[in-house]
Length: 108
Image 1: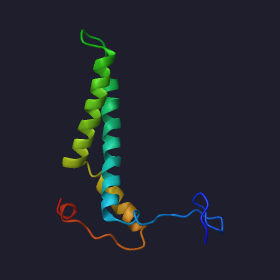
Image 2: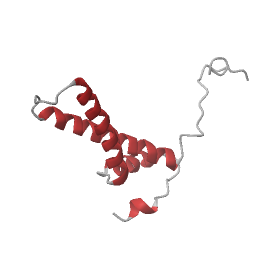
Image 3: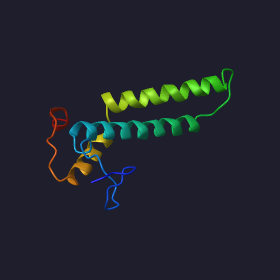
């Protein structure tokens, strides 16, 4: 069987499924999704606050965006809102083999 640019003889794409069905990847993706969601919430909160003042500049705006991104990641990791857990449960239902629960997600 020859593969040309990721396609097999039958015209189907060769898929590397070795990374798809691991609990660690599912946890990481769910945590990253929650971080993105929290970052969007922080961005909307910043837009709702009145602008202006003595210390407004593009540099400060860029710094606050980076600070919000890091804060969102830390919040998603250390004090989650539950979005990641709900997403993991939802995605785990669609998998062929059940994903064992972790000890940190059981008692909350």
